[in-house]
Image (cartoon, rainbow, N blue to C red; front, side):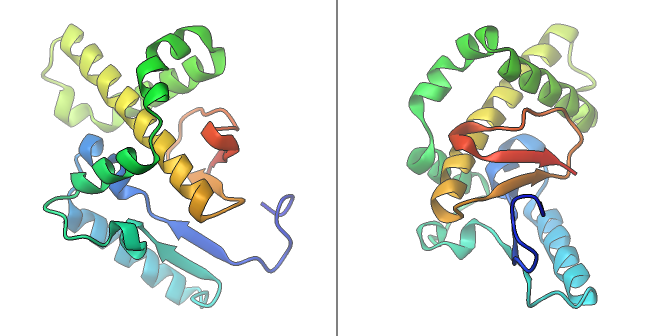
Length: 178
């Protein structure tokens, strides 16, 4: 990060839980616990003045009363998604080696992460379910990239998840795994 941003930069952590809630099977109570844990950690570090945590609900366009966590994703995709990206994703995965590697890395990660939920599926059902989940996450991720680029110019997207990703996502956003 120091190669891109000067010493003394403030850090904004954008929690993207709602982007992928439909796919990851983590409820809002677990998310709140995670969010509160981050706030406690930042407080213990004495860094509340330079590190802030935000999410969709801190943005006016997402402050409507939602019935469930999935509605954030629906609004995100309808306002920031690219229908061409979604409709051409299969063909792009087949023709773009970097995108194929990203897809395979995410699929491997999701298979391990979701193992308790998919273990009883047949091999064919498991492959189809994983493919649908990963492609859905990629479409949601593209919408998230567009949202972040608009609201956080110069953003670097860090992932706490260990899977291989290309260094450049849609819209020129850089991503690194921690």
